[in-house]
Length: 132
Image 1 (spheres, rainbow, N blue to C red):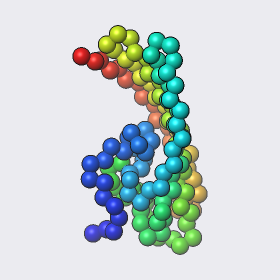
Image 2: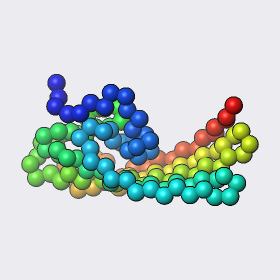
Image 3: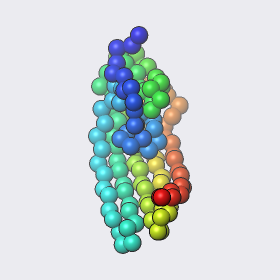
C-alpha cells in the first residue's frame, strides 16, 4: 500500500505532456500554451510544461502508467524534475487531417541530485486522422 493519490482513469497525455513521462500522482504541473488557427483551418499548438514533485523525499515520481519511476528518499533532493516543450501542427484536408508533433524534455535538478540516467528526451510523431 502506498499513500499517494490514485488517478483511476487517467488521460495523462492530454494534460501532462505528450511524452507521457508523468501521472497526476505526486505532481505539481504548470502549463503555458498557445493554440493558433491558421488559414485553411490549420492549427499550431505550442505548450510548455513545468514538473515538480510536492513530496520528493517521501513519495515517488510516477509515469503515465502509474508506475513509480524513481523514489529518491534523500532529504536534500530537489523537487524540480524538469520541463517539456510540445509543438503540434495539424493540417485538415477534407475528411482527412495530418498531424505532426515534436516534444523535448529538459531534465531538472531532481534528476541531477538523484544521479538519474535520464537528462533529456525527444519524441516525434506523424499521424493521419480520417473523419466519418
